[in-house]
Image (cartoon, rainbow, N blue to C red; front, top):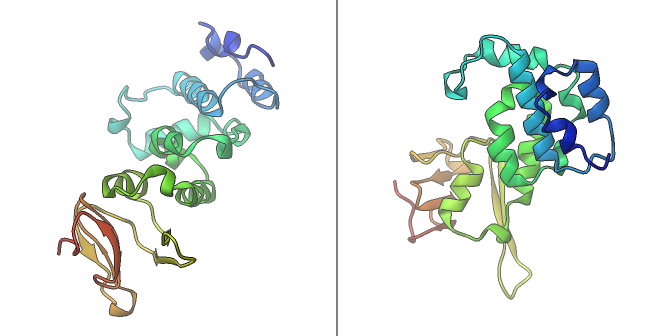
Length: 197
């Protein structure tokens, strides 16, 4: 479809019937960014779901479940893996509870794979992209060598500081000025030689 914005930006868009929206979403040739399509589908769902608070921060589990029910059969037609990582965090993560759990887990894993040298090595970037995501793999290639180092964190990264209790799987996450640290001070990322304890 050459000009999908004519439909998506229409004043009548939120009054479309669900079957019409699904037919539109099934079109493999929508010439529009998939993150924008998702925005419009969420907008349509909100308009069709009664009693949603205007601010998502005020939503209850019941509100998310109502939106999920409204968007049933629509969400499966979004091409999530065509959405850039920055938009996954900004546009999908706030609504992750309306997705099937395995889809969100796959998306968050895919997002972790995308995170790399293109984002730089500032610890603040690491926290922006990885905080509150479980099961993180960190891999680093050492310059001018063929060495690849890394570690696995089965827990959720947080900026408040903490340490895995089992010494055989020591992982430390300090404040916002530190990225991940593995095995005490052996391997890590941050503004100093030792993470905040």
